[in-house]
Image (cartoon, rainbow over the protein chains, first blue to last red):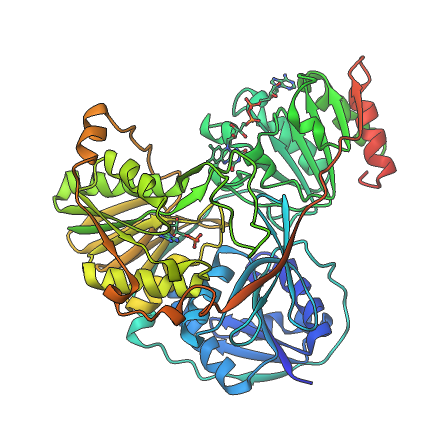
Length: 319
Length: 259
Ligand SMILES: Cc1cc2nc3c(=O)[nH]c(=O)nc-3n(C[C@H](O)[C@H](O)[C@H](O)COP(=O)(O)OP(=O)(O)OC[C@H]3O[C@@H](n4cnc5c(N)ncnc54)[C@H](O)[C@@H]3O)c2cc1C
Ligand SMILES: Nc1ncnc2c1ncn2[C@@H]1O[C@H](COP(=O)(O)O)[C@@H](O)[C@H]1O
C-alpha cells in the first residue's frame, strides 16, 4: 500500500501530541502510515516508540541542529522533497498554527491544493470541513495533486495499533531561503500541568461574569477537578482577566472537547464560533435569557459564585 | 518605508453566513460585507509605522466590485492609496490561486513590508502570509502581537500555543498580526472625506500577467462538492439555582461520566 505521510507534532513536556495520534489513526485507513519527525538531532528516537504504538510503519527522521531556529520554511523544504520522492497517497498535518503554515508552503512548492480545519477524510480523499463558526458543513476535495490536509484536533478518536517502524534518516540541508525568519527566543508562559486548550477533552471557560483576574481561580479550580484546560471569552481577555492565548472563539482558539463548561459567558455568536462543535455543553449564567442556554445540554440559571464552589465541593466529595 | 496592507472583504461574522446553493461559494450578495476584522489591526500598524518612520501605505484587495466599499473604508483610516484587483475570472479562486494573484500584484508594488491579518473570518485558514512569502522568496513573520521596526530589521513577538516566540527578519517581509497588537483608530470625518479623493487603481488579471485559467473555478486546486447547514443545537435541561444548582450540575456531569 502507498504511504501516507503524517507530520508529527510534539512538545518537550508531553511528547507526541494527541492530534498526531489522531492523524496516525486516520492514516491507517488511507494507506501505510509513515511519520515524519522534523526536529533537532535525536528527535525521532525520542518519539519512535509512541509513534509505533499508533501504527507508524515507518519514521522519516528529518533532523538538523538548526531546523528549529527558523520558522517553518526549512520544514516545508524537507517535506516537499520527500513528497516528490515517495509520492505518498496523502499528506496529513495538524490544524495548528505550524501545521497550517507548513501546509501553505507545501501547497505553493508542489502547486497542490490544500484543505485546512478538516474534521474527516474518506479513503477517496473527500474531506469534511466545518465552516462559518460551525454552522455549515462542507465536503470538499483537492483536485490538483494529492490530498494535503490539516486536521482539527479532537476530530478522530486515537486508537493504538502496534507496529515496529523502520527509521529512515533524511539528509537535511538548509538553504538561504529557509533562514529568512530567525527565532531569537522561545518563551514558555506557565500554565501548570493543564492540557493544551485545543487538545483538551474538557474545557472550562470564564467570561466577563467572572468579574476580575483573581476570581479566575474559580475557573482554574473547576478545570483542574475535571482534568481540563482553561479558556476565556474575549470580554474576559479584553478586561485583562486572563491571557489572550486562552481566548476561545472566532478570533481565538477553536475547541471541540467532549465537555465545554461556560461560566459567566453570554454566548455571543463569535464565542460560539470557537466552541459549538463541543460534544456536551454546560453553562452557568445568572441571566435566564443568555443565548448560551440555547446550546447548553445542561444549564444552571444562577450566581456562579454560589454554583461553582458548590459544584467543586460536590466533585471532591464524590472522589 | 513602502508598506502594503492586505485587506479582504468578508461577510459580517456577527450575522448569519451562507454558501451559495449554485456553486458552493461564499454568499456575498445577501451578507453584510465588512473589512476582515484582523485586517483593521494591520492597517493601524501600518499607519503607526509610517507615522514613526515615514513612507507610504497602500491598501491591496482582491475581490469583487463590492469590495470597493471596504477599500474606501480602509482609506478613511489614513492609508495613501489603494489597488483593487478586480476580474470576473477570479470568482471561485482557491487560496493557492489567490496567492498567485496577490503575489503578482505585490511584485509590481515592490513593498518593503507587507502587513496582513493573521487569518480571515470567512476562510480562517491562516495560509495566505506563508503562501505569499514562499512565492516572493521573502520572510514571513506570522501571528505578531508586537512588531518593532529598526531600519530594515523587523522583530515580532509571536504568540504560540505554549507562550510566545521572538522572531526576527530583514525587509522585505510579510508580517501577519493578531488583534492583540494595537487598537485600531476610528476614521475621522476628515478622514472619510479625504478617502473619497484618494487614488484607487484597478488592475485586471492581464495587467498582472496571470492567465484566466490559472484562477477561478478553472484553475482551482480544490473544490467544494457540497454543503449543508449543521443541525442547530437545541438547549437541553435548564434549572434555576435554588441552593442546589452546583450539586445538580455535578449530578448531570456524573450521568455523562465526566466525574
Ligand atoms: C469580529 C469579532 C470577533 C470576536 N471574537 C470573539 C472571540 O474570539 N471570542 C469571544 O468570546 N468573543 C469574541 N467577540 C466578542 C463577542 O461578540 C462578545 O462580546 C463576547 O463573547 C462576550 O463575552 P462574555 O460572554 O464573557 O461577556 P458578556 O456578553 O458581557 O456576558 C457576561 C455574562 O455573564 C453573566 N454573569 C455576570 N455575572 C454573573 C454571575 N455572578 N453569575 C453568573 N453569570 C453572571 C451575564 O449574565 C452575562 O450573560 C468578537 C466580536 C467581534 C465583533
Ligand atoms: N482576496 C484577498 N485580498 C486581500 N487580502 C487577502 C485576501 N485573502 C486573504 N488576504 C489577507 O490574508 C490574510 C489571511 O487570510 P487567510 O489566509 O485567508 O486566513 C487576511 O487577513 C488578509 O489580510
